[in-house]
Image (cartoon, rainbow, N blue to C red):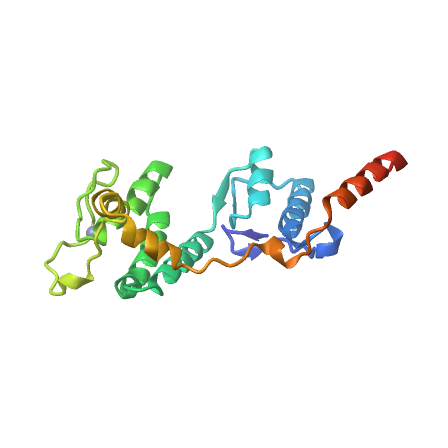
Length: 218
Ligand SMILES: [Zn+2]
């Protein structure tokens, strides 16, 4: 537990997974213990910054403690997703944008004074990467950087995704589905997970259940 005003570590808790019934419960338990200690010493919290661990979110919400997420975790989550996409075919262009997008996350977090402003600034990146520097949201109507002509036009990304897919479906797949059906059938589908088990005899399974009920085990 660190006090962000003074950059001082004020408490450390060691939690072992088998104390709390599994590793996913450790974060919340450590936090609980630290908060109890601080409370017992009369420390009043303005807010708390953590990662986005779901149990911690729920715990702090229930205790009515103002909760912020550590921007590092958010940036890391987005970067991992972008990296996965950039590894796919035609992902090279996105790779070149990753550092800027990461910087934009930190800039948004540090330079916004409200939630809605943060959303306006963060989502403006979807325009910026397409060379569009004016935005619909009045809380962030245009980029703050100097607008200049780029020599490399190929660096800009293009919007599409969903619209392009809908066009393909309605204009190409519906009028002539045969080639698409054939391509679908060529996709190798592995056998179901249950296929590796031997199918038991239905009568035997039912009789074992019935006899368990008779024994009063359930
Ligand atoms: Zn811009």
